[in-house]
Length: 200
Image 1: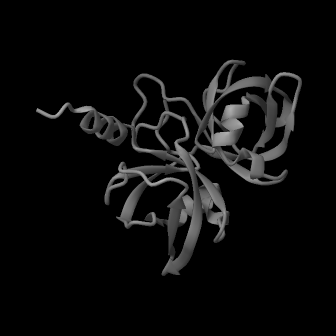
Image 2: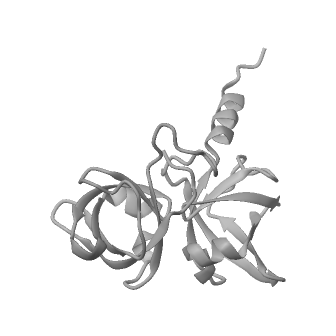
């Protein structure tokens, strides 16, 4: 479980198919709390991955299943690109964002990107429509906890403050880019509950 508050970023060094799984390697750009041993859960661009390699100078390695590669934008990343990183939530930690499971619901494409003052507005079109999107609700884009500003039949918009642009990889987004999306966990349960109600 995560909060969607990115701690640091990493620079992708490689994403290659190994003997049993894809292997994703990256180098830390800053400090990431809780990375002490193999087996730690870390959100990489919002995707919960298990740490399988810990090298010198902040080199981290993860194994990625084919299903995970298919459901995320990992296959479209190139060496040198930044990814957002967050260590897993621990009992007693402050919850400043929202509950993020690290299980990507789908991909989205940035359709609009515009500046207003120092803030940035982006409009994202999901691959599939979702009933879990509501204005002022929560959404995780590349693992970043954000507030939905507006929703229409095509997708949704969010505002990004300068701090978010500077400390995550969302500041490097361009129109047409693909992003990982995770809808609000509570909204998904409510939507499922409503859909499962038996008519009287």
